[in-house]
Amino acid sequence: MSAGFALDDAAWASRWRHRRVADKAVLSFGLLACAVALPPWPGAAATGVAALAVLLLGARVRARTLALALAVPAAFIATGAVPLLLTLTWESGPHVGISPETVGAAASVVVRALAATTAVFVLASTTPMVDVLAALRRARVPDACVEVAGLTYRFVFLLLESAATIREAQAARLGYTDRRRALRSSAQLVGAVLLRSWDRARRLEEGLAGRGDTTTLRTFDPPATSSPRFVAASLGLVALVVVLGLAGPALASALAGVAS
Image (cartoon, rainbow, N blue to C red; front, side, top):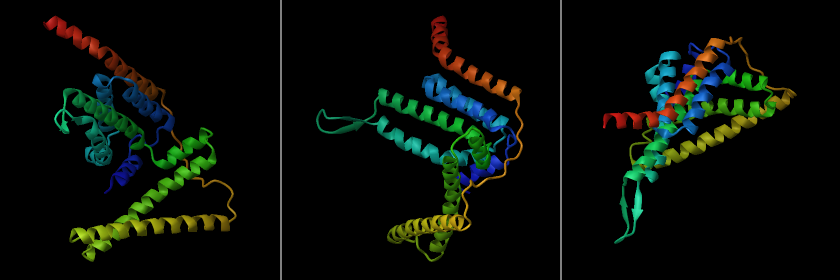
């Protein structure tokens, strides 16, 4: 199961499925703001821990599902941190090394990015896309933007399913037995998926035009409950993270002074 399917399945099965999107957005975007605005140590680190606690203990997202969903973003974050970790000097020729400054910079980026990703997952793993689209309509977002977002989301899953089916067929025909065949099969896979996506988009447009459709593609909007206690608890958690992020360095230095 891919990360996208795992996250979508977790959202449909979430115990917070019927909470208002706005209530969950307060918690998710509040933690996201903390991850971006607070110092990485300990602000972003505390944000990541709080978001993980919310996902695992509050929303009851399975640890395996969360790990699968975080795998791809974590790989991108680690790849982007590699250039920050290395330093290039030209004293007696080019020399690549690692310094304490580059380690600190790379660690700060990794911690902040992981905390921000986990904060976004608070909303993504508890709210199906149809609920998000309905909330955007209620917020008066233009219908064209909502339609593009919804169709893009649907096509992502169609393309993932098509790519998995084509790859299974290629593997059954020994298309990945060596490097040369793997490269050829990968190129054919990309080409087939692009052609299929183009064809499906064209057929969808022609079908809607043939029906004379000029309205939006409405989706089922189930009733959601608003909880002032949930919003208050969310704001309290965000405030606690802010306090820890801002007062943490001063408290650490004070404790170090007392210990010395």
